[in-house]
Image 1 (tube, rainbow, N blue to C red):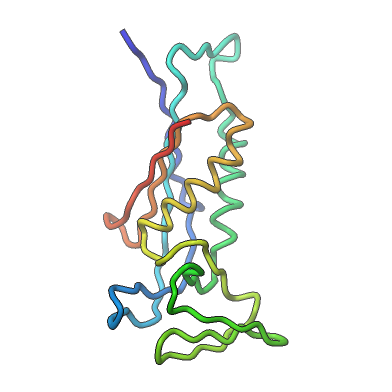
Image 2 (cartoon, rainbow, N blue to C red; image 1 turned 30 degrees about the vertical axis):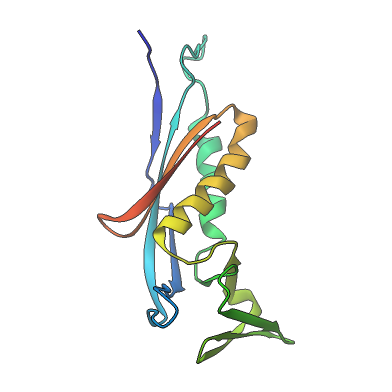
Length: 163
């Protein structure tokens, strides 16, 4: 018989409010708008994990600090896909001058996060956050992570990583 223990974290403070626009095809994209994103995470213990005398395998507070730090990096920023070929950026003294096709934005340097993605969809955001958080959790012995990003309650995407 195979058994698994799963930890679940879906805290109210695992949220970030960000602006973005989704790019649909070579002619169509949403207008710049925002969401109040909510992140939830599950971690699986390896089969046969011994919880020892403590009765647990990882401290929730360690996990929460890492997750909160990652979502805080995105909070109150405009998120842009650095890997999309139609996004052009020039760093000026205090601003990013950003051109997307026939649109032009000039935004303060500290209010924009360029993500290593081709689109700022919930699919890409969940993958990006899962990968970033997973890297930081590996030293804690986490080898299976599932992360969901919701842009509105009941509407989102998840990404799963297993080492």
